Amino acid sequence: MKKTSTRLADGRELIYYDLRDDTVRDAVDRRPLEPTVTSSEIRRDPLLGDSIAVASHRQGRTYHPPADECPLCPSRDGRLSEIPDSSYDVVVFENRFPSLAGDSGRCEVVCFTSDHNASFADLTEEQAALVLDAWTDRTSELSHLPSVEQVFCFENRGEEIGVTLGHPHGQIYAYPFTTPRTALMLRQLAQHKKATGGENLFDDVLKRELGGERVVLESEHWAAFVPYAAHWPYEVHLYPKRRVPDLLGLDEDARTEFPQVYLELLRRFDRIFGEGEPPTPYISGWHQAPFGALAEFDGVSRDDFALHLELFTIRRTSGKLKFLAGSESGMSVFINDVPPERAAQRLREVASS
Image (cartoon, rainbow, N blue to C red; front, side):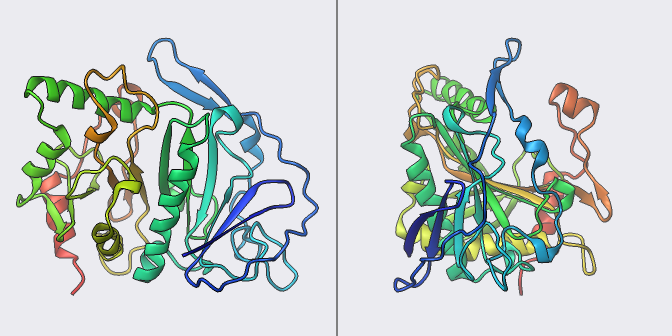
């Protein structure tokens, strides 16, 4: 992998990740852009104890542009985009309309390929490995920023999810706090450790699932399963079999095997609802241990946390979506229409031949 860092016309950082070590990146952003102005603010809810970001500048972000005006395609044929060069393998840049910025964290865009009509599932194993390298490198770099406490690499795929740019891409949010979902995991982790005399909750969950009816896919270094209490109609958790707190902890064997496993999962997701169905909308994201202090989570260290990826779709059956209505949105109590065991069975049925 070759990494080349440059600056866009408004001062934002852009980084090329190339498969070839001899690739030269010297294209200059020639757009007449003014410096980016953001107004991100973090506010803490006194009743729930969690934090939200207020980012009013995002109202003007690019919304469903036609393919020939896509800002994530390379700059070609006189049309200038967010990527100055005429081609790329993987590129990461600071979001022009970030939810988090400055002392409130940082948001980045990750373009998986220059092919506008592709998806992550269309990547080769070599391309997917390069994305993993980019995620890992950005996690390392962002963790050293003084305003950052947790790094979340994720992909929203499909208009039903709310995606406003059709080009295959993901995002990285570098939060200035531990997110509420991670805090819940850490509290459960602490309680389990105390109740069992030191056992690790993540290890016990993985041990319980391996070999069971909810396993979707298993390899030498990875295991994917539908969780016992899945929130979403089709939801898969992917764990490295050796517990590590973040992407930086993956060893070479796990890194080498990841592309094959992950691409197979994504391709199965596109086959869940049968031939002729539109691509399955999904959210996929890496859960990593926070880089800040964990003193409030009694007896828990970063090494107790288990890196894992969660992949789920909001489509519950052909032509129907799972909406977050009263119970889910109002009280955070999910009601799942698809039994996890049935979801796992379906994801095994659509395995690549």
